[in-house]
Length: 342
Image (cartoon, rainbow, N blue to C red):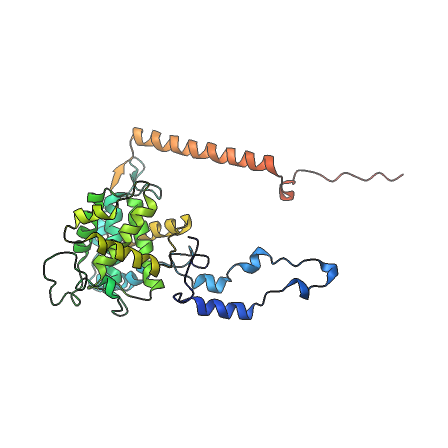
């Protein structure tokens, strides 16, 4: 369940196995026979086993915190076009006119934090990220297990142009909101859903397109709810929300989703935080502002209590760390004594 390098994978199905073989050939392992007796047994340092910076930068953004998210890159084309159009037409962005700004007398803050995001705003941002994935996709690579015509979610006949017409942002938002409200999922689950979705697109080398976006999003939500929430929603519960889908179909889709992820469902805290702040950047660039409210006495006291609690925890951690060991770097105040020569 670790990172993409250490997760449980099948050698025959891993797209990264060729690269790992090349790395092993270029970096031969030194055995104890190659080391002289006076040097002792050779142990490889932990830094030698880590990925180089060049490979880390090329890593999957859902695995590495420094790699840029895919949805933010795909949205830049539309953002640049909007800015260019506003500049040529001498128009001001409508978001700047409706946005609330703090002053000396009034401070506006939103109730969304990285640990407790706003549910409605987060779902809107995730739906917008999926919208840009579909709109600015490179091709139409897909798999049969996610094809809506071969595995329909409803008994209604799938339109003939289902694989050509891109869904609107509102349609994607309504689909995700229905699942989250019915299953009572949290905003954190929405962020993990986007992480799994981009990890699937990278690992399986496929695209999210009009013919498969619903089943891919459903599979990501299904997996994220089981990994993130303590009381996960069962597959049969989703069948009550989407009444025309069978439990067998849900199980098969979940199994294929896990296999394509190479059973790597780990989401580090740094990756989660990166996706949260990139979603906020996406919201600012597309005028999807988080709800702002003026800071009152009650909220100020609450923020002060939270800050004091975090400060006390930090002090306790520092004290416990100093009791366990003392670094030589901290011995700044100790002066050298003069030697006495007899």
